[in-house]
Image (cartoon, rainbow, N blue to C red; front, top):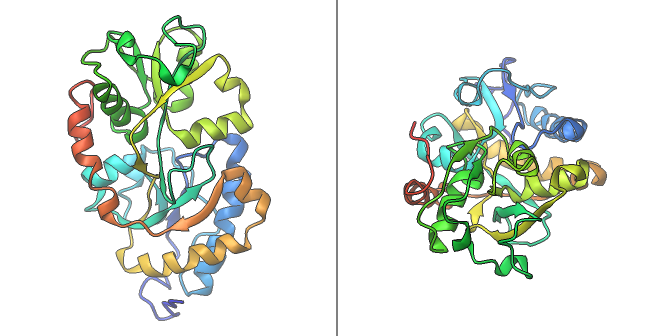
Length: 284
């Protein structure tokens, strides 16, 4: 196991920030706090002065992820690959417990529509998506791999060459709420978000039917702004996960830590370029 030691230049610092913002629903904050406590304990054992508590940033995440003292966080795969690499170093990702296992560290978003939509076939996953051409769609953010890029690629792959209004909701949960309210016809939801909401807020997915799955994508990356600490953080994570109560990992649907490489995220850049034929994919 790598030990940076007490003389490591970062070990004496006490200004580091840590966050886990991507799936931090109110109901899951105690579990995220318990997870971070175990990780921080192990990092401190390795000589890194990790913060005792998570930061829940009020500033835009784009600013938070560029903070020079960021020790640990979680971002989205497409913006990481497209424009955060100069500021962040990849640690890896988590392997999540999902209804369909796409392999360690990978998953697919879920294409959803209102259950009452007459365009849905008797077998929802056999629905002809071309019937949704011109439909109003929801995306959580214009730089989201799971909620915007995946939607554009999926629709293009199924022969849909136009959509109607695109509503940017700000969050996957809000996209589902817009659908339940009848204001959008189609959305693609991060598979982990959908599973976690099903666990802690089942009403958030009521009246919504999964009609397809997006392309295989790498799970949300764990990152650091401290390039020289990547290896000790990687070493700390499996040890910390082994010390976390099983109920915490079950609540967060975390199975294991996976050491992804930058190459796992690079393909998301051409995916974003292709999705921009239909979706308003952000450019930094």
